[in-house]
Structure formats: structure tokens, C-alpha cells
Length: 277
Image 1 (cartoon, rainbow, N blue to C red):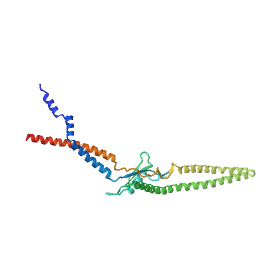
Image 2: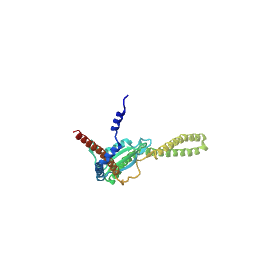
Image 3: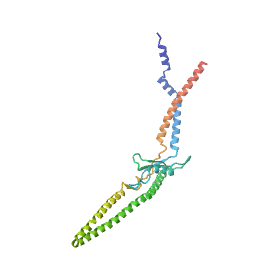
Image 4: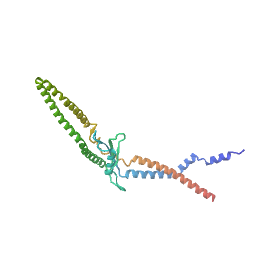
């Protein structure tokens, strides 16, 4: 029967003692502290010396004309147009200086709303760029909006003129029937029958006028508008000082611990080499 004691002894020798690890950390505390301070100092220098960047955001609701093409402009196409005109990338390998648009995306779940984000070296730069972009889009869409409304307005005007003429015909026929009632009842009846088609035409036109009038009222039809107000950001979005300092502290501590174990390993290796020699 084999004796398992040597195997157990070998396992005990190889096992890492938490106490030994702690002793290494205490022994190399100066190295750990130095590494921690250096990383923290580098992080603080980056956080406090890097030029701040300010972000401002708005939401733009794209206008539409119901029954005459829908949205004034496809939201995805509009976002691509804005990024091409005001985005950071001017061309391949060429970047635009701030301020520029960093985000132009369709709001999730609302295909008629576009969310825009601008970056600037100052709060005023970011807000001013958003204001310029919003006014530019609204100006373009106003022209499209008025162009789409024009045929509907002209049709309503034509219907109103036709209705006025038909009402006058109805009144004239009614008066004529009254005049013929005593002299020729048959002819009076025929005149009264002629009012039927006129009444039907008036009813049909009233229904069309109502439908077109409803198309011209919100929410079926509305211009492109800004949701909320454009305000200059109060605080910079970059760099995030607290996050940078926290990451620098964690990185410094981890690096210090790793260097401490590496230094201890090298020290023991040298000592073993000298002993064998």
C-alpha cells in the first residue's frame, strides 16, 4: 500500500499562503504607494488640465402634411444630412474643429422626432450650433410645408366658390318654383326636382371640405418644431473628473500590487541563484 503523505506534503508546500501575500504587500508598500501616487497624479493632470468639452442636446419634431406625402422629410435621411453638413467628419481623414454635431438620431419609438447633440469648447458654442441647425431645418421644412399646403388650400377655396354658386342656384330654383306653383304646378314640381342633384352636390362638397379641413389641423398636419428650449450646458461633459480619478486610483493600486509581486519574485530568484552558486 502506497503512502499518500508525500503528495499531501508537496501540495502544502505549493499552496500560496494569504499571510505570505500580505507580508509581501507590507514589505513592498513603498513601491505600491509610489505607483498609486504616480497614477493618481497622472489622472489628476489629465482631468484638470485637459480642455473642457460642453454638450448640448435638443429634440426636433419633423413636420408632416397628412394625405399629401406624410413627413416633410424622412428622419433617417435628415439625420444623415445634418451629420454630413455639421458633423465632425468633413471628409475621409479630415476632422472639423468644434463646435460640431456628434449625434443625430431618431428617438427610439418615435420616428417623427430627431435628437441632436452638439459639442463645443464653450457652452455658448454648443448652444449656438444647435440653434443654427434647428433654424436651418425649420426654414427648409417651412418652404416644403407651405408647398404641400398650397394645393389643399386652393382646393378648399375652389370648393367654397362652387358651394356658393350651388347655394345660389338652389335659392333661384326655390324662388322660381314658388312663382310657378300657382300658374303651373307640374312645371313647379319639375323645378323642385332639379334641386335634388344640387343638394347632393352640396353635401358631397361639404364632406370633402370637412376632410380637407381636418387634414390641415394638428396632429394630422403640423410644421417642424423644436421641442423645448435650447439652453447652454452648465457643466462640461468631458473630461469626467471623478471617473478619471477613480480609474487612475484603481489602476495605480493594481499596478502597484503587480509590481510588488514581480519585485518579490525577482528578489527571491536572485537569492536562490546566489545560494546555489
